[in-house]
Length: 274
Image (tube, rainbow, N blue to C red; front, side, top):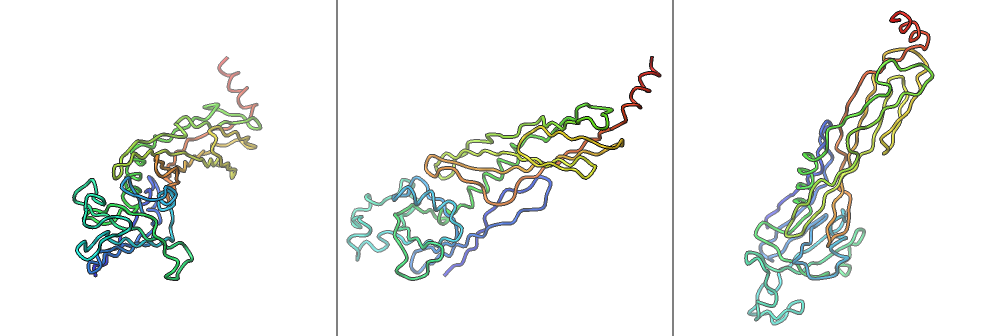
């Protein structure tokens, strides 16, 4: 028996430590020509079964799957999952390098042998079953290069006044349609949306998905305003619906100084110029 461990690659942060990863374990059993999988799997167009299974399989963290080759021994087996084993064209895959496998499913919290259910069949190539790993890696790569640079403006841009509102306004896009990619022949759309945390330098902070933040300073000083953007990505396909990408956010930060003065000081400055 060959034991292969695969780790899903979650979105990597731009300016933060690497994210926690979700492990997907794949065990290839050569003797029985089968695979045991713990975690999420990506059932592509070759899957023949209920559409709900395809959607659920993409995000089920604690599910177990067992893939068993269809008509592994056509000489001694006449029928397998409704296929005629002597007629290989009835269960053949479009990609001739692949073979068709029966898909068994065991839900979270289930453990009895009788709890296993056959949900359909799917084609598997020489590299192994279609886990969610490749999809998440593709999303990670695309999202990292697609997220726009974080930028914001402070208004007024200089010499803000005590007891009057100062505005921090995000000027970079807050949401994007990152890309359309193809995974195992399935078109997948990637999108991302940001939420913001604004620290005004005087101990006050605001968090929201909106792009405009107002704050009133009570004392004159030079303050450092810092904006942190947290990007969360999602993916969708016609076959799988829409899902959030597991893992932490992509993180960006930007900061600018804000000079706050008393109104009297501003009037004195203008008087000297006149």
